[in-house]
Image (cartoon, rainbow over all chains, first blue to last red):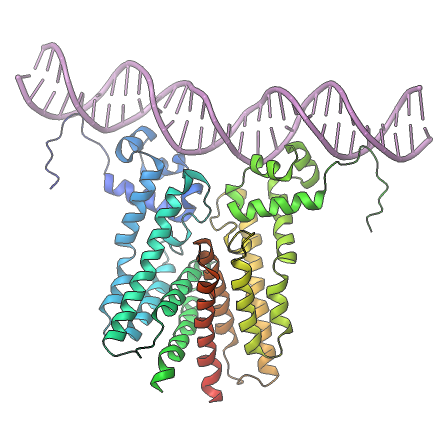
Length: 207
Length: 207
DNA sequence: CCGTTTTTGTAACGATCAATACATAAATAT
DNA sequence: ATATTTATGTATTGATCGTTACAAAAACGG
């Protein structure tokens, strides 16, 4: 698919690798906090190369969040889809979150949750992108819960919307918790609390 | 207490009012996102007056967070302390949070939670201050729960630490939720979910 | 070979950042 | 009235922000 005959001087750096580096910088510093100087230093290129390859800081960030969603979010969201029951889906989803947010060699917390919470620059383009992705996450939770209701695992009057909002909010809170340096055990304690809520929400009618 | 005989030209603006304005700007924009220009414009003063009265941007932010904690946090934390039972304390604490985070005429979400999540500038002074305040919040929850155990409301093996971490994390998540434009009803849905967790955590042994 | 195309490094752009110099203004103290 | 002290407004500091001109370099097609 990438068999475009190369015209002109070939690029001397690995675009995908540079994007990964940029993603990590945005992950640690956020959109506003990551300067072009820091980005180019981490990417191992000069600013003209950055602009030639990615267009602008905004466009680079959007590509970085796309990469983040595709790579870093895989374990979390595949856990949600592959689990046999809705209950296990939520629990594995949260446990994967706890694990992903406390990896030793990676920034703590989520790029999507923490990347740009203050709508200042770029007139909201960046914020809107992240907000949309956060909304999609809640929707994925909602779909999984609705699937559980359809399969009969959950009572027909189970409030999927409330539950989806709740678990998405817990995940967001875990990002701040992780950014504060919380241990994996502390994050898993939050998971324990959240799953206690599941017991009460789903088990009330089942009991 | 403020009877210091005034020497020199008296200040022509209300320092407390200016600080309130600064707090609101930091609340909306965060520490990094709030520029001196925006601050002085909102405060109705020029930058030399800002530096003469507050010292620096960092010092101004620290005073703003102190004011925020004292004024905006009162309802939330007094609800925690004044409620007759631990259960009601947590519920009113969360309901006050939902209310405070979705006020029409105020920025949504919490300054302490969202003010500076990326440790870039100021070598962490700002981040450390907010982190400390977040830790104090969790401690306040912990103390209230321990008090509930001491009063016999909760089983002696109730895991206060896990519960405190959980509810603090839910509150942090609600800040992001509120920043995303969630309605008060949506925030209260999260409260409902969190209180379901309470039912399972505290009621398991009580039932 | 020459011309075209694209990348690279250097160097700079105007704008904005946080923070101040400086002279003037307005109060008190003697 | 004079000296002292503090606040104010204007203007500016050096640094850094995101972005781009520009020319040399390295690939191509002819």
